[in-house]
Length: 506
Image (tube, rainbow, N blue to C red; front, side, top):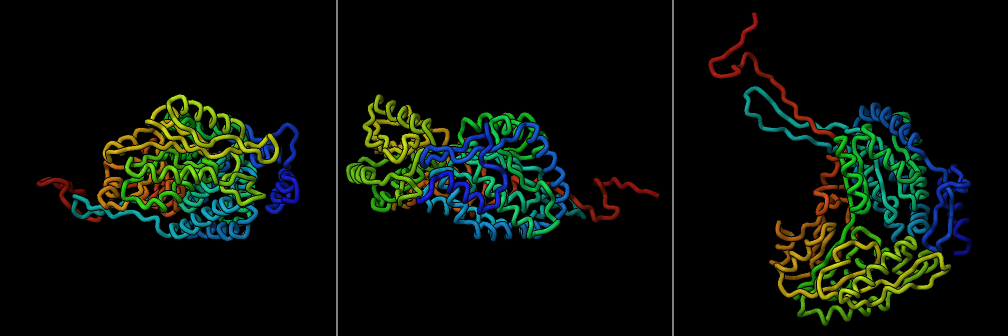
């Protein structure tokens, strides 16, 4: 990196044509975890601004819902084209604000492109079923209509992809979107909006003002969005703690929610597993993005017959992993988001050690200024699942435990609230099928012979285990952004309403 981070940030934002000043006195300070230095200061929106944005979005909804679905899909197609042109710059912003490696930053933008491509096809496939009716001379069917304004709240660890998972589907379904990004990553959101505005300029007058808006601010802005009865759907990505605040508030006004929350995700390594395959998948799934993914592997159950083969190899992998500045090196592990994340990691490791755990790694690594927080990933051998093992710590900690009985390990696997993703490593068909069955993994994602991290946009993605729903992205997730109606058409003439009863007009 030949220029300081503030200059790089300003130059990158300038490439998007972002005209909002990045040096507002007393504004929201944007700190890069790469160096711990402030790279921008932004003006923020108020609760009143949020109300105005919601009002504008509702006006936009009345126009956008009347635009044919395939035409709405054309806007998303153009957006995907603009994302492809801006992929490198947008990926760099993800690295600056979230501390991801360049490949991960680019990968997140690619997820945006992929969901746009999915949504373009979906715009011609918003199908409803024809339903068998018990009445002669009648036809019954379901139809799907645009729902209304969609509020999107995102977290720092994926500063742009989850917004696009929601926005691409919402837009083709006929809904405007309002985005409240994390206070830690607002620049990426402004850059995404600038890219979207380019697509709108190419699309023309069918796109009303207020179709996509970004609100930069703190909890008051999020609360105003969540509590407004003019916002039909709130899609929130973040911790289970956040979800427990958002969910009841939306429910109190009978709104709809998509909650994609935290993941205390686990893997099971069975006696028949391909250990080389398992080692690679576990190491990346547990250490990638410095453990700051909702799909990070945080718990690992290893059969006692192979424990002494796999765990020493994992220790070696943890000891040799590279930790460094993602903008200057090819290190696998970048920075934690801030000092609070590092302190939370150390607290969890101390607690685990006090419960009989053996901690390998976890110490702070000196990379650049003292204001940045880098740490060696930690592998913790635990005697049982207890204490911090049952809670999600958003840091690179993997708790490893032995098991001997398959039914028992399934119970342990599911004995946490925040399971989002899960994995089993086995070549035994019976173990595989049980893991995928109704009595197997309770998670929204259940993988065989691949790790927990990563999710393709074709499969609906969400925190099924904790929330009982919350699907974003592909598959049938589009239905959450629409309202369903059952329609019955009577094409009979003078047909009896009941045996022996006929009404006659005349």
